[in-house]
Amino acid sequence: MLQQRALFEKTRALRAQINPHFIFNSLSAIQHLVSVKKIESALKYLNKFSRLTRNVLESSMEINILLADEIKMLEDYLSLELLRFDNSFSYNITIDEAIDPEEIEIPSMILQPFVENALIHGLLPKNPGQNNWISFLILTATI
Image (cartoon, rainbow, N blue to C red; front, side, top):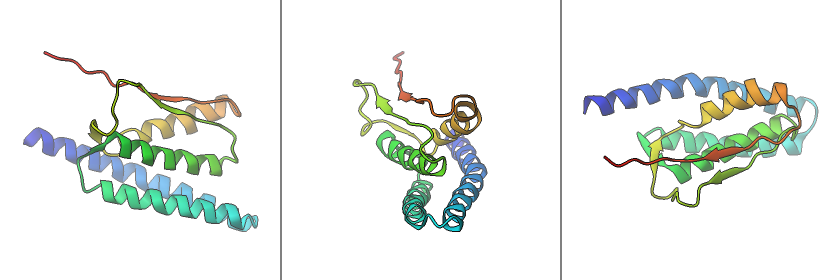
């Protein structure tokens, strides 16, 4: 019980660190789109941002969520970043055929910070305009 509580607190602390940064960047991107009169893009971005925010808030009530739900949030996040960076990258999320994302639970928002750091601090500055791939491989072990 104590280990589960510790994991919950770590996950909550991680989300608290990430969400303000992501929210600020998203709102700044929407503000920029409005200021350059790209109203349709701003509305599209705002729609995706609000859906992602709702899903993140809903999932924050749970310690674990289905991999399928985590992937949906990750796709929403990536589509926001795609809009923010004027389609300067592409992505493809693939899941090993042996994995059933409707059966596997993982800590909520565990993948997004890794993807954000890889995209913002690694791939975009070094390889603008190149394809960036995200793949999931989940290993299981038996004892």
